Length: 527
Image 1 (cartoon, rainbow, N blue to C red):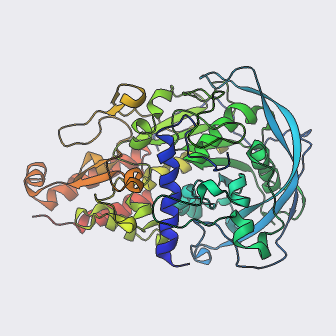
Image 2: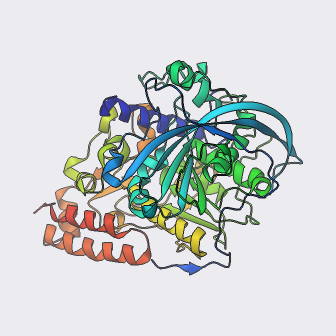
Image 3: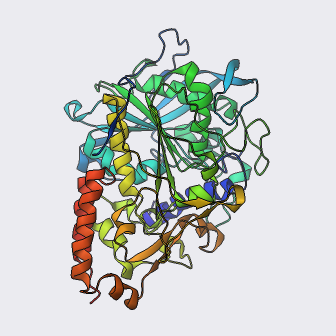
């Protein structure tokens, strides 16, 4: 597949997910058929599945090559990093969960096991080739399927940190759309064709044996994928000779809605995952089963917080778009021993890193940062949006978040705490409070907003409709730059480098991204 077509599909998966979020309590357009830090009192976690957990999946390898492994976000040259990409089938009996009592906004939800059904799905594994390079951490991503195909947006944004830390990544086809597709998701609305029939329809030679009983069973399929990854299934061990020490679940957008429900309702029973990254969610959560598109599920509250008695770390990572367009500001909650919330000023649900195509070839050499930071290169991206895409570079604080979360799970040291982005109103009236330059006040403040060359916003004003999730950037004119930096780019570079050092010290950016952005700043000249 050509890079451009891959990029467009990735973009569509992300944008359609959040278009649904703006008008539903599900946090998603969901599946179609349905180094400053504070010490935490929580003890370091290790994989903790109860010994009595009865459902042990059978793990196997595909028997036919077909068209090869299909999953967006897995096209990097993995050998460059000493990694390999593999695929495994996971099958067994999955249980569906039934709601017990009312689900309140506090997230302390109760469920019980209901009916069971057979399933056969798959996981994609990206792991170090040499076991001595493995950190012991596996990031397990709930594939985003809103676009009708499996996509790994968290891997797209965070792959460099995963590679350099020695972690493994696993993408899980948890939902029915990924396996069998759906009529509802065939039309993307953005002029891009989305394959019908899921994996089975796109490549019956390789995936024809897969089956999915419906999204009532998706949560247990995700649990059993974790069981398989830690080596407690039967058959093939998907991590081979690697010794797995901790599993961190993660999901973005529609998958973040699913993980919110998983954390609140399923994790207390399953106990398989040692931590969670919930990335770009709205105020609500996903249902236990299928959701009819554009119809709210009355059993899920419009506002769903993470339960305060959660026994493992939960890191919630939000952009401006998520706060006001998706309404997450209504679901804010205080930081605690096992909960941390970062709201990143100047960022959007997706941005120029993904939709500009930079993420697709980013090997950490600084080329992406050089393109993103330079206002002269601001543009509408691969989808030809009418406004220049947001250049807030959320991939940089996300890399830091991944590093903090791994340390939190492994060593019990919680990430640093930061103020919330300033907002007014609630519900559909939520607004970001901005300064005289148009930059959000408060929140996690990167050097891009502290020493700005442009105003980056995570609003929904970009057009056409499928561009709204990418926010926009407005480069400053010459007069504004002259007022901010009287001695021209020399002033800018000096101030930016000081801000970068402060961001690293605060734990907002990591050294690799910091060095890349410093180099990018030195290339900019505006008088």
